[in-house]
Each structure stands twice: as C-alpha cells, then as structure tokens.
Image 1 (cartoon, rainbow, N blue to C red):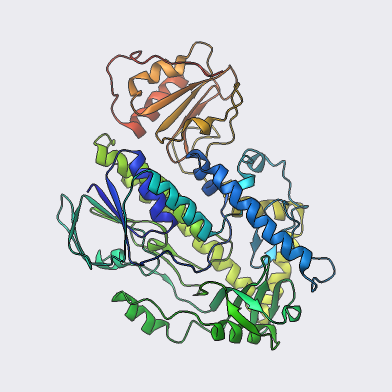
Image 2: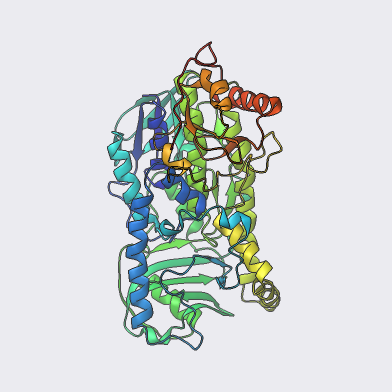
Length: 534
C-alpha cells in the first residue's frame, strides 16, 4: 500500500480521494465500527465548498443545503418564542456566520467587495453539516474504490526509512506513508512522538439536538449571563451551551484513557440538560437526544511539525481549538487538499525537490491564525464584566459595514492565501469563479484532479510553452481576456497568473511549472495538441 490514512472523518476521506486521483494506492483505517452520529460542524466555508466543486461534488452539496434550509425554514415558521426583531435568518439568505456568538448582519455586508464577489458560485452548497458532508464524501471514496477498514485501531508504528510498519488491532500493516487524520487525541501523533504545544482549556461546551418539552423558555440566538452562554436554533431542537468554569472535571483522566484507545464517556441527556439549565437560568426539560451529543473545550494546540519522516498529520491531529467561527472542519479539509496532491506526486515519483516540505510551510500559518481567531472569541464571551465590556465594543464594530464585511471575509475564507513567488494579485489565492466562453467554469475542467492551465492568448502561447508538462497539466483554451493565463494547482491555489503575453509572463509560467510539477514529461515543447474551448 502506498499510503495509509488513519481516520475516516471528512479530512481523511478528502485526503484519500485526492491521493487516489493522483494514482496512489490508498486505504483508510478507522477506529470506530460505524460512522459517528455526533453533531459537529453545521456548515462549510468557501474554500471547502470550492474543493467539492472542483471534484464535481457541488450538486450533491447543493441538495444538502436545500434540505437544510427546509428544516431551518420549518423552525422559523413554527417557533412561537421568537423575540421582537427576530434573529433567525430567512431561508435562502446569505450565509454570514458569527463572531463570538454575535451573528453578522447580511444586510450590512458589502457583497460587492471584490474578494466576496469573486467566489459566489458555491453559495448554494455551503449549508452542509459535518454528518451530511461525511456521507457525501463516503460515496465519493466508494466510487474511487478506496477501501475503508472500520473497527481498526492503530497501536504502534515504526518508520523504517523506506516505509512505515503499523501495528493495529487487526494485525500489522506495511505502508509507504502513514497520515494521521485521527482527531485531536491522535494516536498517530502520539506514537510518532510529535509534540503538541499550545494553551489549555478553560471552558466546557455542549452541542446537541434534543426534544424539548418547553422550548418557549429559551430565547432565540445567543444569550449571555454570568454563568455562561447558550444558543437555541437555528434548527429544531439544536442547543449549544458554554460554561466558563473550567474544563470537564474528568478531562485529565479522559486523556489518559484515550491514549489506550478507550473512547471518552458519551454525553448524556442529563449532562446537556444540567448545563442548559445552569446557563439559561430556567428549568427547561429535555426529553430525548436525537443522535449523539458532543462535549468540547477551548483547548488550542498546534503540532510542532506536520510531518516526521514518513508520518504526516492533517486536520485535528495537527491542530485543535474551540469550534467558534466554524473553522476546524474547513481548516482540516484545506490540509487534506494541500497534502493530497503533493504526497501523491511523491508516490508517483515526479515531485520536485522539497515539494512535500511546502505542506507544513503553507498550512502552518493558517492553522496558527485559526487558533488565535478562536482564542479572541473566547476573550469576548466570558461572563465577567471586562469581557462583557469588550463584547460591547466588538459588537459596535461588527455593526458597521466595514466591520461586518471584514468578519465575513475572514470567516468565509475568501481572503486565504499562500505566500508564493510572483506579483500578480491572484497568485497564492484560491482561484476565483472564472467563466469561459462556452458557459462552463474553469473548475468544471478539473474534476479528475491535476493542474489546470487557462490560456486566453489568441495563438495559444501559454499552452504551447507548457505542452512539455502535458501529462500533469490539463489545458483549457478560452477567448482573449484578462487574466490572459492562470495556472491552478490541484488544491485550487493559483500558482501563476498573468495579464500579459510577453517574455516575462512566459518565463514566470515555466518557472512555476518547474517549481510545482517537476521536470517536463516530454522534451519537445509542442508535443501535445491543444484544443480550444468554446
């Protein structure tokens, strides 16, 4: 086996799919015998939705969003406890998110902002909860023929230099590379001896969907008190509680137990009800849980390295933080998209020198930012007077057009970029919605993975000079327009772009091709015929 991925959550599924598209033989090992029913992330950001779009999965995501909006719409229509002024967005309204429980007003956002306006094609596929996303990705993985071995736990590993020998509860596994996508209590990270520095937890949160006997006791949206905070909605029965009296009492012991593979104790109906009663100041009664509830903290840590030899980390195995702002799932999917094609290139034998090192270099700064973004929200959510005063200041800023637009851009991920050589404004950014003469979009031509080169020169100048890399690059010809050329990596990051057709543009393109796709696959620059689009 070329690569073994540990963990069948969204990150592991995306990574395995990207590796398979690159031609690698890959398998997934998952400790759980069945997919988790726990409710986690409630939506995805723009880069994650665009990752689905690049692989032809956007229609499935759009179907999920339609179903979710119907559920939310039902909640809005039937709720009889909505306070004056509402607080629940109307079904179909633009997704904005929240900062520290302060929901951002879509009417304040400048949707004409260039960063936001350049990424609208996936608006219909962002309200995708984690459970539904896992189901969607599991079908994708099945279509690609990737085996998922459930009920298998990793117990030991040895990097032999030319591969990894993995001890599991189902017997030894020999693999070329091992990638831990096994969550915040990652066995792979621990067994590889990778440090996990950061800041410890100071709160306990619960998330559940429950049957509520007397929902009229609960206010809509986020509510703060000296005891903590809670949110009711936007889906029927969904409750979130946050208590700032420290982490769960059994957390140190739970960590020790989890090292041996024993799962943490499940969250009970009584746990959620007790927490909700404390923070709401009511005697609200929950009669049943719909699916598994989850418990979490604001533990914020980042792995000292995302890779050690032939062992790599992605997702929560590489970084953990509180769920505020909905960044965790998206950060992990971004890791998987970045790592997948690079590790696939190494397995295939064409990776340029140092390519795999760029995984840590590119993803670490974004991970560090997310940790600080969530820490900042904790700072304004505490129930003490100082945090309450700070929350008022932040609320004032977010109630302005500039403040709301800034926060939505950050939360949505449209401003994310990688520090790459070149001075064109697109370089290092996720490729925007580039529509072609035939009505298609550039991403429609990349469902099978690989690099995409958009050539808008009248005579196909860029495609001709890149034809020596035809085995790794797909060429898309379009009418003359600017940008005149764009080279997009498999993870959607623009590696090169130009508005001209001069020698400097050609030189920059060839440098980017060498940097990211290695040596040419043919010796002749015009070996491959290039057909125009449209």
